[in-house]
Length: 254
Image (cartoon, rainbow, N blue to C red; front, side, top):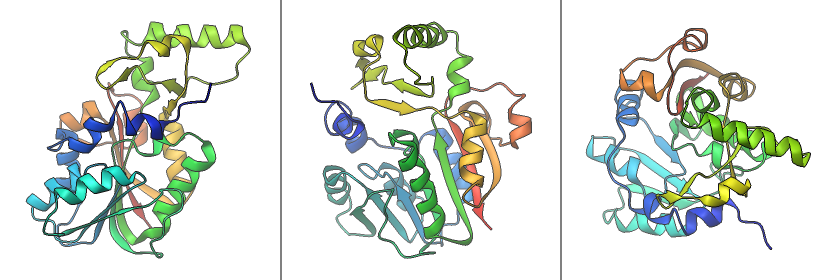
C-alpha cells in the first residue's frame, strides 16, 4: 500500500478548508497590524486559497505576493482576485524561484514549515525564506507547538500512547512527528494506528534554533495564548508562561 503524504491530504480531505477559508484569525490580525507595514512588498508562503492576502488587501496593503505548491489552491486564489492586484503563483517553499532579497516582509504562517515532512526540507524552506528577504526585513513564522500538546490534558494520553507503542515496535520516531488527529473536520481514526502522514511539532528550543541558525534574529515570540492577549515575549519569558495553541515568531534579517 502506497504511503499518503501531506500534499495528498491537502488536495482531498483538507482541500475545502484551505481553498475556501475566509477572514483572519485574531492572532494573525494582531501580528499583521503590529509588525507589518502596508507600503512594503510582502510575500505569503503557503497561501492556499489566498485567505490571508485577500484580507490584507482589504486592510490597505499595496504590494502583495503569494505562492503555494498546489496549483489547485492558486487557481482558487486567482478566482477571488479578479483585478489581479495580488500576484499568486505556484512555487515550492524548498526551492523558490524568487531572486535574493526580493521582499521586505514575508509571512510563513498557517504552520507551513511544520507540514514539510523531512528535516532537510524544513531546513531548506527556512533558508530560502531568509534568502529572499531583504536586510532588515520582517518575517512572521508559526509552528505547530509541541509543548502546548504536552501540557494539554486532553492530548497527553494520546501522546503517551504513541510513545509507548512506538517503543514497543522499536520505532525511533520522536513525538515531534504526530499524525493528523482530524481530517476534513472529522476524527482520523488511523491516528490510533500511528499512520502517515505526519506533521512536525516543534519544541520552543527547536523552533528558535531553526530560525537563528540560518541568520534570523528573533524579535518576539508567543503562543496563541499570548497573542489572544495581544502580547509577545522573549524566549526565556515564554518558557515560564502559560501556553496554548501555535507558536508564533517575529524575526528580522540582520
